[in-house]
Image 1 (cartoon, rainbow, N blue to C red):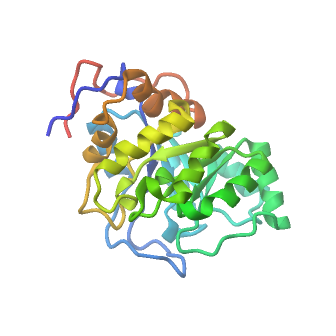
Image 2: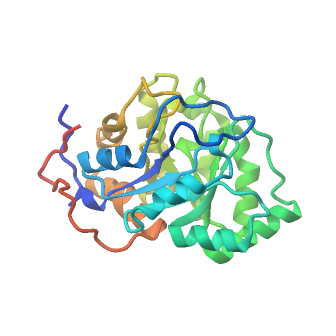
Length: 294
């Protein structure tokens, strides 16, 4: 299909803030929720970025690889100008390992706590880690059901680290924006230190297409476009048959947002947040009057 023309001046400035890369045969962590039976390689992903004219991307460590970030770091090393990374680490990770990750383009860590016990972020080990992250100017990306976000957000804000909330805040699919946890998340917009990813609506909406429009409207009202970022969630693990890359991008483009909001969500906000350099060389991305093939 032909996607609508992009309202941003050049899609080469756009950032996909959420994707995963992996291959079969990598060592998997015990207690994982699932084990993908296919490859999602960096080469395949870069081809998708090029096909849609997206200039930059953030690779997020998959949950099933645990704290073994070697594959992520290898991928980031392929193009340190185009790629950034979000790692998964243990609280006692060494300063040397953090420095190496930072040199490869890692800008934060992810707490993927879906179906996991909540960590005590006030424990000494976590307090020390959060202090180190603050010194590195790293962020914490939080993936947890909306109902459990508030106490964790309070602690992370107290620690002085920027926070990114995954996937619309993960409201209960049966409740959508009526989830009290989502309503509580909206109140954190005034903090100015929390960002929310508009990504993976299929993990939140139980097939209700109105969720994206309603949730985005609420998030814009409370956070503003300067605190929202788009992510494809490629390769859409456990939902591969429900969507594809083009549909993930169209999700945002078809909301009827004004050009300034789209430009902020797709380009200027993630560019600044993840520390991308100024304009990349044109990779054949479409202009405002061109259309991308999806």
